Amino acid sequence: MMAKELWKPGNMLYPLPVVMVSMADRDGKMNIITIAWAGTVCTNPPMLSISVRPERYSYLILKETGEFVVNLTTRELAYATDYCGVKSGAEVDKFRETGLTPLPAEKVKAPLIGESPVNLECRVCRLMPLGSHHMFLAEVVAVHADRKYMDEKSKFHLEKADPIVYSHGAYYVCGEQLGTFGYSVKRMG
Image (tube, rainbow, N blue to C red; front, side, top):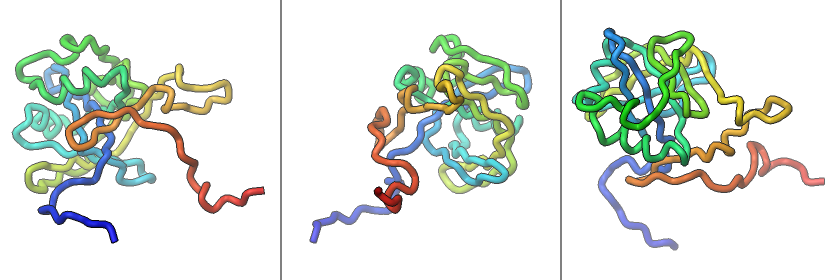
């Protein structure tokens, strides 16, 4: 039997996707917040969630506009990802300070981050106060994928972008592929 230590209840569901969420307030001022509390919610309609502390500068922008873009992060974007998580948009222009490129979105007023391999345009469906964080449940209204990760058969290869994850206070590059969905029951032959 393996020895286990009992800890108080907490979030140990790691690793997590770490994303940069871009937005623009009603006056067009852009901001980026780094979020590790993000996840897929539904396939049809495509939905995701992000959870934000109400005291964060970005919270009011998200609440007032109801729009944002989830930008996937990579090894190349790790420094900017961390910077956008520790600096407040109330004090600095994160696009300027990180050198990230804001690009216009198709369906929302929030900008895309040009350097991100995948951008998910989102509209908030519901805001749920949960405690320390409030969850923004959103529908994905458009997806942008960087062509440089497409092969000759138009298959997208996100792994070539070196996506990163967040685990217990640290960032990691995703590792080697171990299998594909269903490989455990696939017939060998």
